[in-house]
Length: 369
Image 1: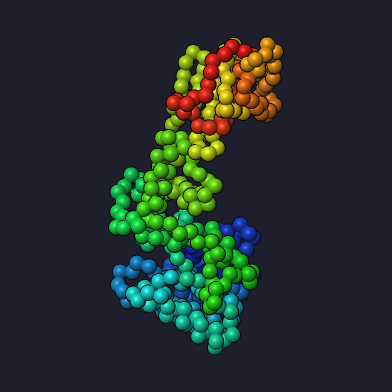
Image 2: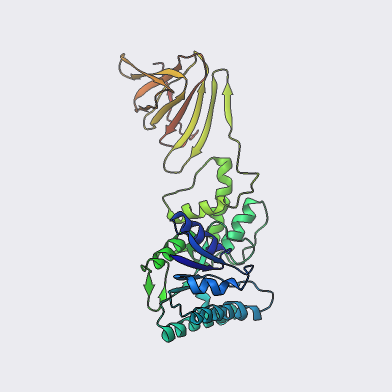
């Protein structure tokens, strides 16, 4: 299948082409403002489907809205008619097509042109009035508030919020791309005359900024946001894509003593925390028990033994562990427990607890095994 994508180097175009290639669509005609215009004839002659994503959002002159958003659409459709190619055509419009401003008027004109083209030729047309689209590779300080906020906050630059109470209707780039590929297959989602992305997120602008701020702080606090919230999951992925390339890494606080070290890796509000424990040869750590807190231990390097004793019993249980065998040991409540390094090298243990450590309520009671 031969697919023409206009606006190929734009935000949606880059994401769409990347996923088309992932799905083994290899005959893709990429057309952008830097492409030699002579190629348009060849592409329109051969295409089996057209994704018309080209357009302008922030031109230098208002006249460029109509020249680009309407004028090029007219050129594209005339070229398709020239070669009697009446393949399906998708166009990216905007919810602003309903608004009386130069950008909205140019988008509405492009829509009308496409509807007329369909009536004249019988070609299938798919018009998407996208709300605000967010995700990786969107240009900051252009036409996306989320891209700007993510970029500026990640780079310690100031942001400006005119009205934090503004309600934003947002679609995520992966949802947009999935919908466009469904349209390619003839399975588009439609409401009346227009096609739609089925997953839309509605949230206040101020709440978005608060979330992005929390993402930045999460590195210092070691907290991972609530990934069960699908919007937070998508926004967090978007934020990470704007990190400065020399700041992908960040330090953790190692609590070091003569026995080894203990380092908190990840904390979550609802799924506990993950830590890394390093024990020196011959060292025993632990000798405590919990009422409600429970843990999982996974030794990934070295060898040792985890001992348990029910607090009202004299019987000691032993579980021998080694980095040579990936084996998780549950630490039940009501059992005092310890872990001893039996090897001659450091023993490294990944430890998960069902709650983040709270120094005010540690739920940890010393008792020798």
